[in-house]
Amino acid sequence: MAERPARKKPQLHSARVTRTERLTPHMVRVVLGGEGLADFSAGEHTDHYVKLLFPLPDVTYPEPFDMAQIRADFPRHQWPVTRTYTVRRWDPEARELTIDFVVHGDAGLAGPWADKAQPGDEIRFLGPGGAYSPGADADWHLLVGDESALPAIAASLEAAPAGAPVHALIEVEGPEEEQKLDAPLGAQVTWLHRGSAPVGQRLVEAVRALEFPPGQVQAFVHGEAGFVKELRRHLRLEREVTREQLSISGYWRVGHNEDGWQASKQEWNAQVEAEQESGAERAGAAQG
Image 1 (cartoon, rainbow, N blue to C red):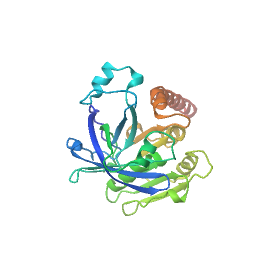
Image 2 (cartoon, rainbow, N blue to C red; image 1 turned 90 degrees about the vertical axis):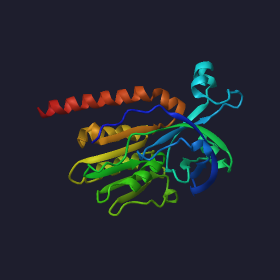
Image 3 (spheres, rainbow, N blue to C red; image 1 turned 180 degrees about the vertical axis):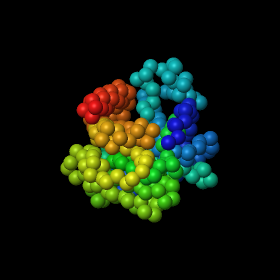
Image 4 (cartoon, one colour; image 1 turned 45 degrees about the horizontal axis):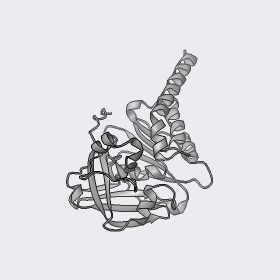
């Protein structure tokens, strides 16, 4: 697999809502446009993401809006709140950026904004970031995620190399949350209905039960941090998938908002890596 490119410094962009669409009871699509997207570019990666900026209502920010200046001059608790979302689609000719939002009533910040968004509403964001896309050098592809990873999985299915086997496992609350996806010929898309089970439980069971095709896999596993941790251990230790073959990350964590999760994510990742290294050493000692 090719090495990940160096991260680019995120740029500040602004956009206006052009239209919205309710895809399922709990997912809303927002299409953004406008001259503020003149310098925006995406498409190299299918997990491109942007960081939406939500200014605090009781704070006056300098104009022109400058995040670097705000971070330098304002105390941290007065910075705009950021929420990270996958780029579902970028159309450079129409200059339209599509983002899909999971919405659960008034819970959260970005979901309610998307649910109430009207044409003309303005939003600023940083980005894009991203590092994954399905490569042509893999023998087959594994895509695993919950609702939060669905936009990236959908984009990855659209970009999958022709003829390469693809297994996509997507967990949603119930059948009403399924979407029609543009999958390549031969791709196997499996919808898993969570119901009252913990988030990710169905995905862990499905990946463990999956008969892996022969050859080298390129795997994309994203979503709630708890099941991601379980699958990272399973894929690395039991399936012997190398780091280079694996794009895996917790997008969110039960019981935490994004601010709390991002603050602890680096430490959490380090702990998971240490646990896996220890597990690999124990496995090696047992075989020796």
